[in-house]
Amino acid sequence: MDPETGTNRTVVTEFILLGLVETEKLQSMLFVLFFFAYLVTVGGNLSILAAILVEPKLHTPMYFFLGNLSALDIGCITVTVPPMLDRLVSHKRTISYDACLTQLFFFHLLAGMDCFLLTAMAYDRFLAICRPLTYSTRMSQTVQRILVAASWACAFTNALTHTVALTTLNFCGPKEVNHFYCDLPQLFQLSCSSTQLNELLLFAVGFIMAGTPVVLIISSYIHVAAAVLRIRSAEGRKKAFSTCGSHLTVVCLFDGTGIFNYMCLGSEEASDKDKGVGIFNTVINPMLNPLIYSLRNPDVQGALRRVFVGRQSLT
Picture 1 (cartoon, rainbow, N blue to C red):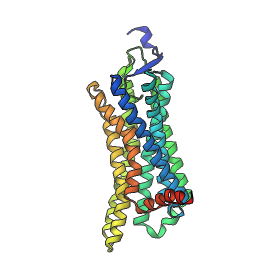
Picture 2: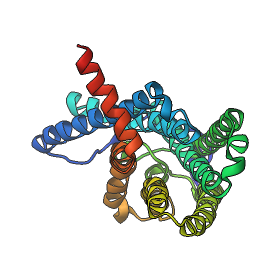
Picture 3: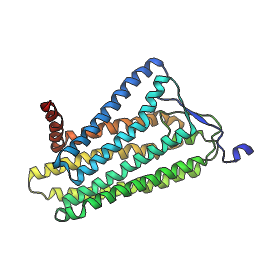
Picture 4: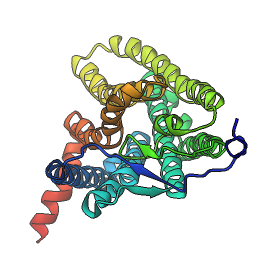
């Protein structure tokens, strides 16, 4: 082994993000599409936040978590899309080593928080439907804050673990990242030192940090489904399934793409598929979440109408 590569020293000081397309015409189209998607995502999630803040009827635990989810979606798309738009405009595809690690840390912090928050939302639905008599005490404001704080702590630990572990790798060339943002699978491919321990860490932590929430969500909804089926009123069953259906749709989209992205490492041929999954994780999911929750939820629809129509009538 070369002595230079045997030390834990990063030779590469910057990476080149290859992005999604090469030709200038396609890059212009891509800029318009992603800029529009960014505006729709931020506008949609801000609308959900506004509706929750101004509508007293939505001051409940479920919408407290939904408001946090909307804020996370804004953060998640902001970490990846604006830097990509800047590179499309400036035609500068380089990103410094430190900026790359920073982007990776915040992406995993927000994505991890998303995962834990969806688990808290499933627990909330379990208590609301299966334990209605003790719901108000078991899901008090203190409990809500503890769940959010614990989610942040777990997500921070996860993101910091992977970021610190990545700094132990050597990068001595090549430096072309076949993606539009910095993420672990693509950076592993560029390392000139062994990534076996890093990959094992990703699998192990991923199994604990993602597998545990999935098991808890599935367990919660098995109990929820059994309780809903015992409801005699057809209208009651419809309302319960509508509320839970929105959450389950988001969980399936988020966890499905996440598992595909991080449990299938080591294949350079999978890079184009990784880009598609990356678009789904960072753009489509945050953009769809407001639509999913508003289209299937009459309470949110009513609050949004009062927010926008009410303001227009005042003017």
